[in-house]
Image 1 (tube, helix red, strand yellow):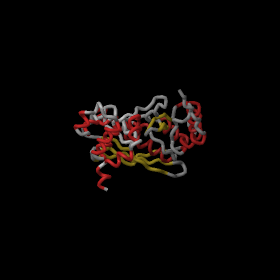
Image 2: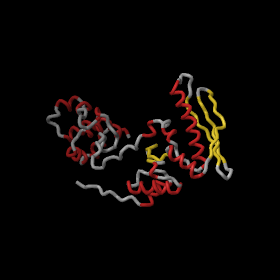
Image 3: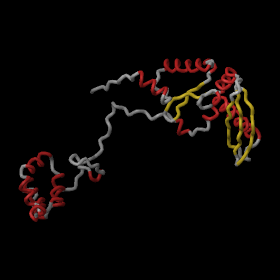
Image 4: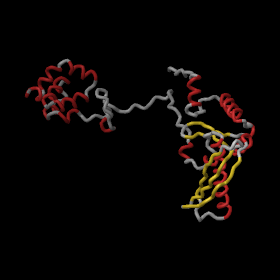
Amino acid sequence: MTVPIKKPVAAGDIMEAVIAKGDLAKLTPDERVRYYNETCRSLGLNPLTQPFSYITLNSKLTLYATRACADQLRKVNGVSLKILSREIADDIMTVHVRAELPDGRFDEDLGAVAFPPTLKGDIRANAELKCITKAKRRATLSICGLGWLDETEIADIPASAKRPAPPAANVMIEAPVVPHDAETGEIQTPAESPADPAPASASLPSSAVAGAGNLSVEDLGREAAQRGEAVFRSFYKGRTPAERQRLNTIGDELRGLMPENASA
């Protein structure tokens, strides 16, 4: 048995997957830790507070920002927030927040959650707090120039998008052979499989069937050829390789016996 050799992944391909595609799955655990720490260092965040977490999204392993990330970004960059409006329309609560930096630059963003009248008590209060938190974190990440997903948004992503990528096919396991015609490559249903072919005698005249035990494969081939090309093809497919070789030696004679060639 031949064991396939696993080809090493080029470092350039790994960096392309991380930088261009945002897929961290190709990194080793050590490389992932270094990437995580370097990301925190570049933003002035403390990695020990876990400002980011991992999530598999659309078959790619990526980072998303936690509450600690937004809180530290506001402190490091001196971001101040102001709620501009809060409204409910069509069972949706929307909160409008403005984020401003010490130099006067500002940005605005929205947070929205489902807010139907059926929400009561703590559930209603938690929905309102979630909407405010979402707006504040979105505005913070936006003004800091980060396109990260926030953990309040992760919960709203469909579960199907969070599924990990399907595993690659195991090259050590042979794929099942699909029944097919060896000559034409046409895929066959179980009823058409050569393992259980229709008896060739069904296409032959009654005289050949009656004396099939005394006729050679050449004579049976001549009988089938006289019935036409379609009948001969059906007869030929039901023969063994050795019998087909014997028929091939008298191929010119058989073609001459077919009514299609005789009429030509």
